[in-house]
Length: 308
Ligand code: CP
Ligand code: NVA
Image (cartoon, rainbow, N blue to C red):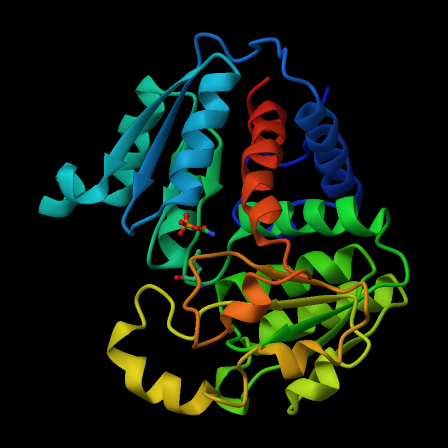
């Protein structure tokens, strides 16, 4: 039985450290068993997406199916939302028919408006600020490979984006030391840096922003990056690539500074040759496919926590 104190998941900061560990432990157990009960029979999950997705959509739809429930995929362009119906009225309408909503949106404000106006649990499937489901899968993957969160150092290299924000918060909550190499003009907003610092202080762990990727990766247990150009940043493509490349690319040489048993993670989709080279993402330290698979398992735990 998973119990969550909040009936929504807008950011990893909506979960306590104990809740995160409970979700991960449940997911690791359920990953082992193929004969599952179908506890969500009769329940329906709507997925409202403003942006493309491969993993988030597939893993939520499969998770719901395996738990006995149904899903309805809503491309937001097909809704009356695209003709001016308000978020509030859309949220109230969705709540009349289904039991839970996953939303992938441009502006995090839309997630908050949905959560405020829906009578059902709302899960953030990625906004411009946060990606909590990804970070649960990342923490699960770290726990699987390292068996504990104690004494670990995570290096983030690259853009201070949605994945970075929630990953820093999540790692700080679990007591993982963090070194982030992010160009000055792309560091996360101060409010997020303050939150990470506060969470790290509570756990006696450390959080440092460094300028040199080597200083982040040296002796790290976990190295993580993400695309230089997130969905919605396409107009900045050229400027971003010239800021990040080649200094913030995770290549074999940079990865060589990490511990021998370090793991490399990436939420995917990846651009080989930009933020990461093929020898790293397809190499022996990479755990990206297990990380992607874990989206399915940990989201089942989230659905059960919010719906049963
Ligand atoms: N990592 C992730 O969220 O992938 P998608 O954009 O394919 O859903
Ligand atoms: N930072 C990326 C993550 C995609 C899963 C984006 O927002 O496009």
